[in-house]
Length: 339
Length: 285
Image 1 (cartoon, each protein chain N blue to C red):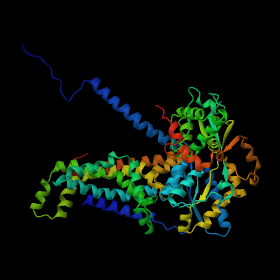
Image 2 (cartoon, rainbow over the protein chains, first blue to last red):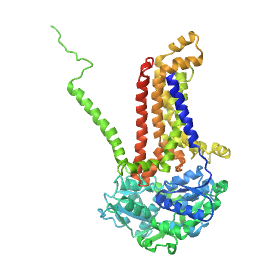
Image 3 (cartoon, rainbow over the protein chains, first blue to last red):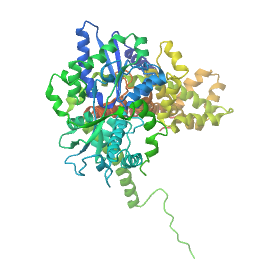
Image 4 (spheres, chains in turn purple, brown):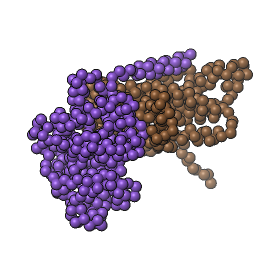
C-alpha cells in the first residue's frame, strides 16, 4: 500500500538523519559562557588562543562561546550548562554561581590579576548623529521628552553598571543626599520605554529599531555599534563621570575537574593577560588592564579620559548586588514601569 | 394584497460586497504575509546568491540545519504515534476522564512555550532531583539535544491529535465494527480500515506539526544553552546571527527556514494529487 510505503520511507529517512548526526568528538572542547557584547572579542581571541595552544605542543581544541544577558548566562551555568570558564559582565553574577551552585570556589576573585578582570570598560552615551537633543551629561537624560534605552538590571550586567554610573553622577551632583539621588535615578528609569533583557538587545532596539534618543551602553558596545552600523548614524557622548566596569573571568572548578580540562581552562584565561590577549581586547574597544602590553599603542588613543568611580566606593558588588538589585532592593523601589 | 418581498439569494452577494471582501482579504494577506516574506528573501539575497550560499553552508549554519532536521525526525514520528493513539482513544471509546484527557491535550496550546522550557529546567537542572541522576549516568538532558527534543515535543504534541479527533469522531466506529464482524483482527482493522480513513487528516496534522517543530523558538531557547554547532537550532541560529550584526546571514537562514515550511506545503499538495484518487473515504482538508 502506497501510503504505508511513504510512512516507512519517512521513518527510514529519519533514522538515517539521526545516525548521521551522531559524530564522535575526539578533541578537547572548552565552553566559555560569556555575556552579550563580547561576541566579536572572543571570536578573534579564540582563534588566537587555539593556535597558541597548539604551538605549545597540545592537541586540537574546539572553543564554544555562548552569549546573552550576564545574569541569564550565569543562570544557565547554575542550572547545569557544562561551562569550563565564565567571562561575565560583573562579579555579582560569578558570585551567584559560586553561592547557588558551589561550582566556582567562593574566593575566586583574586585567582587572576586585577581582580580577575583582564579588561575593563565604562558606560557612555550613544546618541543619534549630531546629538539632536543635545545630551551632554547624566542630568540631561531626565529632560522632558528624552527617551533612554537601557536593559533590565535584573538580567543584564551592563544595565547594573548603567544604574551605578547614573547613581555616581547623582551622588556627586546632590552631595550624597540619598532622597534626591533616588529621585533622579527613578526619573531616569521613567524615561525608559523598553527594558530589554541583555545589552545587545538594547543596542538593537536603539540602533536597528530606531527607538529612543540615547542608549546607555558599554563603551565597547557603543564603538562597535558605530563600526558595524555606520559612523554617520551615531555619536558617542562621554559623560563627566562614569563607572569603572570590571568584567571578571573565572574557572568553573567543578566542571573542569569533572571534564579534566583545568589546564586548558587556566591557559585560556591567563592568555587574556598576555600581549596578544590585551591587544585583541583593545582592538575590540575594551580597555586593557595592562596597557603597556598592547603591541599597537595607537589603539589606546581611542579611549577618552573619564572620571571613573569604582564599585568599591559603594562597598563592592557583594554589598551593591543585594541592596540595589536584590528583591525589594533600591531598583525595585524606584522603578515604575512606563504606563 | 399580494406580498411582494424579494428574498435575497443566500449564496450570491452583490458585486460590490464580493469585491470588497476579496480586496480586504487580499490586502490583509499582502500586508501580514507576502510583504514580510518577500522582505526576508530580499534581505537574504541582498549581498548576492554567493553570500547566501556561504551563509547557509557555514559549519554552524549546517549544524543548525542538521539539528533542526534531527529534532523533526524524532518529534514528528513520536507525535504521530501519540496523536493517533490519543485520537483513537478519545473518538472510538467511552471512558472515565475522557473530557479531562481532551483538555489535557490542549494544554501545550494554552501554555506559553517559555514555561514549557522552564519546566524542563526545573526537572533536569543541576538543582533538580532528576538532573544529577541522569548526569551521573552520563546523559546530559538540559543544554543538550535531549532537552531540545523534549521541549519541542511538549510544545507540538497536540498538533496531530487535534487534527484527528474531530475527523475520527465524525467517522464513528461503523467501519471498524464492519471489518471486525467480517473477521479482521485488530491490526488488520487498523491498517486496512482506520488508517486509510484518516490518512489525509493524519498527513495534514503531521505537516503542521513538522512546520511548528522546525520553527519552535521559545521553549528551545530556554533549554538549549546556545552551544553553537551542538544545541543551536535554525530559529536560534537566526537570533544569534541577528545579534551579531550579521543581518544578511540571519536572513539567509531565515529564508531557508521559510523555504522548508513552503516545501512542507508543496509536499502536501503533491501527495494529495498523487494519492487523491483513493481518498474517497476520508475528509479532505
